[in-house]
Length: 497
Image (cartoon, rainbow, N blue to C red):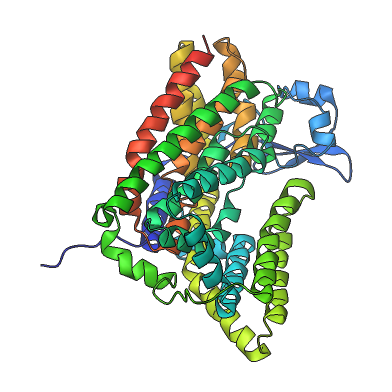
């Protein structure tokens, strides 16, 4: 009898879609009313199951709805998504999702996630063009020589820089661009692909989990909780430093073990396959830098610098980021004097190499669509908010951490989670006499911890790029997962006493 193989990322997500579809038959449907600010008419729109009501955009309206948020947060654009209105949950007629909805979900998900899917495909095309130029070969050879004996600096530098991006502007989906570029560098440094994967993914995960000034989590969550985003900032900075140090030490320990004995790698049996995937077998170490290759690498690097600057300062999102990488590919094609027919062929090949990753992103979004159409997300939120009644401060805080971890499976979007849950959950802090910033912390830390293993998040897409199985990732990450969970529970408990 042949040994059963662990299923692929696509199969895992389809099985989850089946599970969630079944849940829509078992979990009662329900929904909170929502409030949206309409900038064009300068009014609020209250939306319930069958109606939409226009309300004056005033502080008095917010107070009447028991929403403790300054009106300025809406009028100046800080809160632009619909927020949940406390005490408005209503049970609705069940909307169980059937076989048709299950089959259509991946298609709907791919359409809904088209922005990030096109970003991934264009990045693949750019990398395809870079491979033709030979600039990668020259760059990797140069870095391997430069870091000889000090390869550990690469781990510290990459993890820290990406974590800084995560904590400041929510660097997450954008990291998909870094995997095909940085993994070969880690492989050339005699580490395995797991080390590179961990540095990039965990850097982003720790940064976003311990967000300090991230507008997509900390600031929007604080706004919808009715507090200033600077409240609790010191605790989040301490949390960021401790968790980042713990993560880097964990990666360094594994990396040292692999470097000393490659057979200790969790993916040693895939060594040749992964090296082939990233072109390490065909690496031309004889390629030396010349002015043209230096200019190509400069344009390539500038694509990422411009992307980060655009997201941080110019309010860019997926369309602008994707256009940046497309322009970069065209410029590199001109500099390298690649024939038009060759450019198109190699660009298409590069995009095709990441097509499976794009499908994973779409299927994951399809799972979320099933939950939304089945009207079960708000029911889970309502019952979660009921669980904490009568608890002491320490127990309440840690239960909220676990609740947010669980909810993030059903609502993996950080900004979506914030606007839907904060108006409902943050008043619970008042009942146990703790600051509302603690609810913001439990939201961030709970989502961030589960993000490390959440199949409806980005981990399966990241694993697909590196060709590492979810089971191998779980084997690698679970010890660190429990270490971070214990650290988080201790620091949260200290913060409320």
